[in-house]
Structures are given as C-alpha cells and as structure tokens.
Length: 321
Image (cartoon, rainbow, N blue to C red; front, side, top):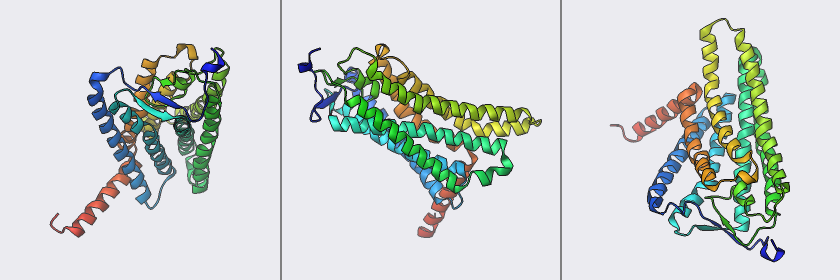
C-alpha cells in the first residue's frame, strides 16, 4: 500500500466498533456488562478492605490484596470504554495516545498478574516443601520486593511492546473491530505484510506468559514430588486444597491469554477474539474473588472479621439492630 495511505500522526483517532453488529442486543449487553462490572468491583474492593483491616497479614493475603488491586485497575481500564461502545450507535472513538495508553496499562496489568501468580506459586512451594522455614523465607521484605518486581517488570515489557506497535504505519482504515485497543486488533491495521511487526508481541508472550508459566509449572512439580512422600491422604488433600484456588486462576488466566496472543497474525478472527476477550476482561475478574473467598480460609476469616466489625459499628450507632 502506498505511503500516502499510511498515517502515524499522534492526533489521529481510532474507532472502536465494539459490538456494533449486535444492534438488537445493545441494551441487554449493556445491562449485563454493567452488572458484572459492579459486582466485580464490589468483590475486589471487599477483599482489599478485608485484607487491609487485618492486623497480621500472611504472605498469601498480601498477594491476594495486590491481585485485587490489579483486577480493579484492569476492569477500570477496559470496561468503561466497552460500556460506552454499547451506548454509541456507530462505535466509540479513542485518540492515538488514549489507545496507546489503554494498551500499555492492559498489558502491564495482565503481565503483573502473570508474575504475581509466580510469586503465589513460590509461596505455596515454600509452605508445602519447606514448612519449617516458611516464616523466615516468606518475610514481609521479600513479599514487598516480589510485589514491586511484578509491577516494574510487567510495566517495562508493556512499554516496549506498546512503543513497537504504535511505531508501525497504519492504513487509512482506523476502525478497530474490538471493544478496546487489544494488541492483535491494532496490529491487524498495520500496513505491513511481513511477520517482523509480530516479533515484539512474540517476545512479550515469552516474557509475560511462557516464562512465568514454566516457573509456576516448576513449583508445582516440586510440590507434587513432595506430596508423594506424604503418607497421610488427609495431609495430601489438605495441601492440595491450599493450591486449588491458585491453580484454578492460573488455568483461567493462561488459557484465555494463550488463545488470544500465542498465534500468527494470519489466524486473527475478530469475532472469536471479542468473545474470548469478553470472558478474559469481564468474567475472570469476577470469578477471582469468588474462587478465593470460597476456597481460601485466610480470606474467609478476614471477610468474617470485617463483617463482624461492621456489624459492631452499626450496633453502636443504632442500638436496636
């Protein structure tokens, strides 16, 4: 395509088509999205407040608090624009800078979650394989350093990927067939025929998906090997129960992310991507607090204490409650 038909002007705008093809379902989808978004926000805020109010926070509670903050930011970056695309008939516009910022934060938060899942798997490894050294190893200093490393590492990778994507020449059509500025959807608009523009995405997938997944797999191989030496079936089931919620979230997170990002540009399918992204950005953040609040006894205990405090405060204000 001729250079005259290309544009990388920072003042240009993209048009997010969203679910414009589902015109008759706009109101229904808007209500569903809004309800899911509000429930997700409420669930993650409850976990965050419960953990912050807890005087003594074990490492797993600390990591769950960070996970809740990530999920809160994650949904706030994506969902409001998706809701707007359902209200506006012909899709919603987003500026060049706004699209780049949304992509950066989306990748950075998703990457931080990948790294955080590694830290949580290491926590489970130390708890099961080195229980006598758990308190000494998983101290507050290490947990804080791991949390900072998760954020800084993912932000650096996200910045490199975003810069690489938005340095590409874009064709005259600036219509993104998606409800947010996802990497494959924006790459699809680039006026290039080679696979070179996909190399930064491949590198990001290796750093944010493959490497963390291998580290998590290594932790669970070591955990499984340690559990083989446990003679008590009750002890094995108890140890597995502490890992169940982390495993469930890991499979959800990596399953959707791998389907969307680990594939060539030629196999890009807007309809499929939007459906999977819908689950990835709306349903899984809703499931995370539900899974942890039901399966993690530390979170359940923190939530019970929070509700007891709230009930006590209400009784002090209104004695007849």
